[in-house]
Image 1 (cartoon, one colour):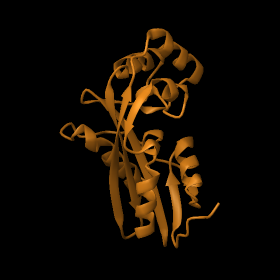
Image 2: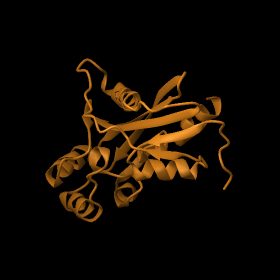
Image 3: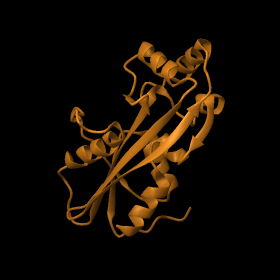
Length: 192
C-alpha cells in the first residue's frame, strides 16, 4: 500500500478502532495518543448539526502536548434524527429505543474533524443522510444481542449486519457513517 507522504508527525487522539483502521487504510502513518477523558459539554444554543465539529475541537484543545511538526487529528460522530442527537447507548434498553427511533426513517450522520498543529487549526464536518427500512423488534433484538453496539453513536455500525439489512439508501460518504470522512480528511491533510 502506498503511504500518505506527510512532513508532519501525525497523531490520532481516538479510542475508536474504526477510525484507526480507516486512517491506516488511507495510508497515513500516525501515532496513537490518549484522547481526552473530559466530560463532553455542549452549549445549549448550538445547532445539533454543529455539535460533532464542536466536540472534535474540544477534544483537540484538551491535548496540550503538541510540539514541533506534530499534527493532531481528533473526531466526533453524531447521529441525528428528528432534530435529536443519539449518542452512544447507555445499555440494552437505550440501544433498543434508538434503533426503534431510526427504524423506517432517514437520519443524518455528522462527523466533525479537527486538525491542529502548534500554529494552525482546521476543522470541518461532513454530513451523510442514511435511510433505514422498517425494522421489527425481533431484528432489533437480534442485532443488539449479536453485535453489542454500545460503543457506537446511534447504536449501530453501518459496516455490520444492520447496514446490510436495514440501510435502504445513503446520500453522502459511507466512511463518514463508519466514523471518519476519509475522502475529505485526505484532501485536508494534503493541504496542511
